[in-house]
Length: 258
Picture 1 (tube, rainbow, N blue to C red):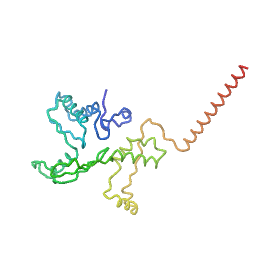
Picture 2 (picture 1 turned 90 degrees about the vertical axis):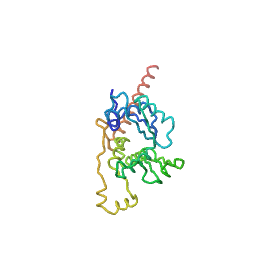
Picture 3 (picture 1 turned 45 degrees about the horizontal axis):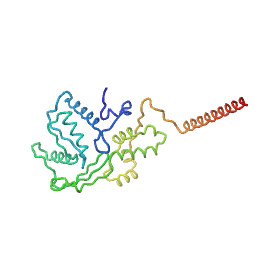
Picture 4 (picture 1 turned 180 degrees about the vertical axis):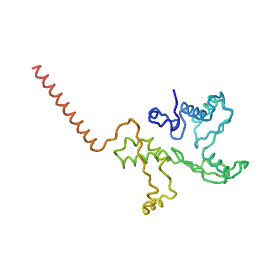
């Protein structure tokens, strides 16, 4: 039995059995979490080690519940014999790492670029705004917005299905999420971007992307409006003939009894 992880799990033959470790932005499925970590260790060449001789740095969302945190701790300490585990908010780790890289010297001590800042953590299911005050996250003032990449994909999928109703069979979530990651971009100024697309044909041609809708090999064929109408009429006609046949049988049975 083989476990497919990441993009491998989105292939046509593996998608039907794909399971996520997350509910929203929380990793709540210990079995899938362990399988994901197994895949990571295999990629790092550590799959055959009885214990991992390195500390683990694990990122987590803001206000991660203790029960969810316990799942990760149990897998790391019991499954991989972890010696040390460091937990921290992903946005704070990211800001600290990028501040250290911007310093330009490996020997430079790790420190935030600015003592006071606003961290914007844009995730798949949620977005968090975290104030940084005096080199420490001010979590009591952090805000959560229930919007992220997941909602973008869903809105993109609904909009595309409205524009292309006859291709809706191929416009499922996995294909649309992949299309969003490959073809979409974020405009620095949304209104200015709309004006440029409307007023400058050359800019519109450069920004527009022509894509071919991906379809699964061996999947159901996409029908045109005429074909759908013809099939609907054939179904109605078949139902009418069946009804007449059953009516004739009942009449014959009633005549025999008399």
